[in-house]
Length: 231
Image 1 (cartoon, one colour):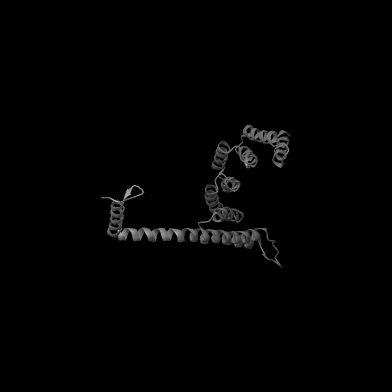
Image 2 (image 1 turned 120 degrees about the vertical axis):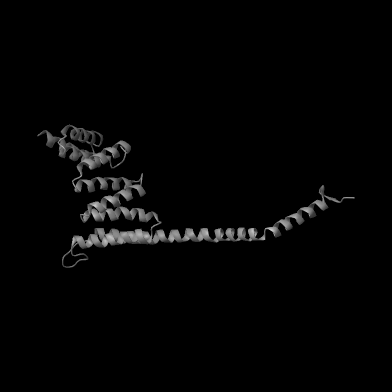
């Protein structure tokens, strides 16, 4: 005679428990490893997140220091910097430190832009182009990423690579014509066209900026250049 509890045979419950115990014993190593992995995840993920958050805060602090250097005054007698070069070198070293010490943070991507900016100011145009390129990719589809793209153009232009600078500008406007940087890039592109003796294309860019950004500084600058070209 079988005894039932809640319509379930007692011997079936014992049989299930016994099988489960036998299964666990036969797989003790796997069960132990699984338990360890789960424990590591439970402890490790919050620990990693905490460390990342702390690294981000530390990196931001260093970034603020670098930006302070960029805006610090240059005074041959009283400092804090006696030459512009000294200031840019200190800022560059500070931003590079972020990339080295906090490479996995979002702030490191921002620091790459400022590294490029410092390199450009110091006349290191080849290095600046490379850094601007990395920054534009790491900060893609952000305002700073678009500024980094313009930095690439200006770096090429500074090395008299006018053809590649023109092509790069045209590509940007084709792919990101609605960017807030579009007016400035169009003005710069107009200059590149003029240097290539292509006045018609230069006028086209200037008219576009003057019409679409009439009330902005860019629009007013475009209008001024149009008047200058007419005279």
